[in-house]
Amino acid sequence: MASHGLTLRPDLYEEIGEFLDTLDADPPKRFTAETISLFRFHSDDWNAQWWRDMTWVHVRSWRLGGAEAAVTG
Image (cartoon, rainbow, N blue to C red):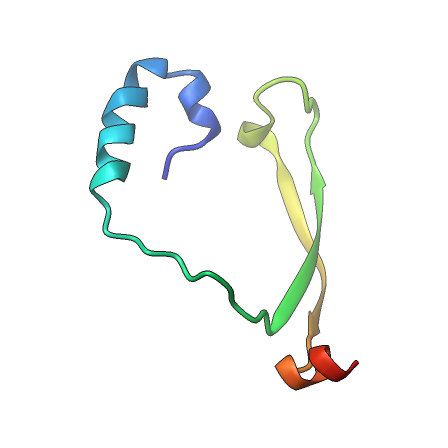
C-alpha cells in the first residue's frame, strides 16, 4: 500500500497513518505456513531507490509438512 515511495512523499505520512488507524484488521497471533519460497533479488544500486529497478526471480518453493510433522520432527 505504502512503502519506500514514502521517502519521496513524506507529506503523505499523516494521511496514510490516519487511514491505517481506521482499518479493522486483527492479525492472527500465529499461523502455520504450508509453503516457503526462495527468490533471487537484484538491484543496480541498493543504496538508492532500489525498489524502482529491483528485479526478482523465483528460484524454488518447498511444501512443508503439517503441524504434526513440525511438532514430532
